[in-house]
Length: 341
Image (cartoon, rainbow, N blue to C red):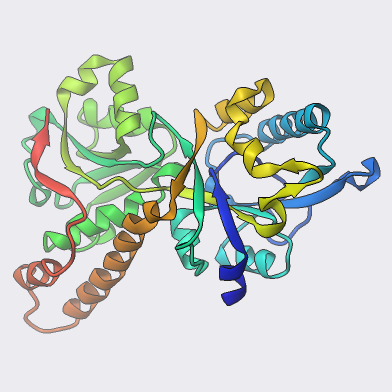
């Protein structure tokens, strides 16, 4: 992993350039070699995408790439790939076939990359680069605490920006002395559309749901009754959902063009705005890697509490009170107790 630490230069927003074959380790079907241009590898984790059509993404990326070549006289074109799983991503990095690699925050940590001295260029959604997760319940459901959700039906928004939500949901349960979500709730579903997560709670077809604050606010704008009928039972801290790492060869000029600068100015061109719109991203921004501190804390605490819960399950006389005493030693990861109106 030392090689990875040395090579990480800077990161760009997740989901800005897409995509090739979904087969791990597979190269793109076509190469820019015939055009006489240099090439560079753009690698994406398969977890970056849910409901985006591959052909639409390819067309948008191609349009952006052609525009950069034409307008900036860029002497290089991307070879995009989509890989499944951390081992395949790590292999691409180590083999030098990942000039740019886009991953979720938990994959970033699993790859063992030390980003303490680097910068992050992140996608901005709803004016924020981070996400807050909300646990929502219906006003009339008489659900005042996590105790009231035992064996309940809970829906979660499945989206690249909600990849950390399952860790957070486990955390708030474990901190309150409950088992993790998969064991505590009667039903735990994943839904790709935010409306399919929020509306079942609104219509009393599900007990609770987990969405981003931006997603909830968007639903409230479309239907103000959603905002009046649903209450926030718990709120996560702001968390950075992911990023795409730039390596040294592409951190500076490549083929006469600085890719990092192009990424930061993506929203200033018609082709760039088309690409950002496809991924529901407003623009790109630069943040300090300290923005990942909350993710590190969440994942570390989650791992420790899961281990303690599993150990407590095997001990005679284990109790909810004992789990709560153990969880109390962890840093706070949520706002819980007062509902938001």
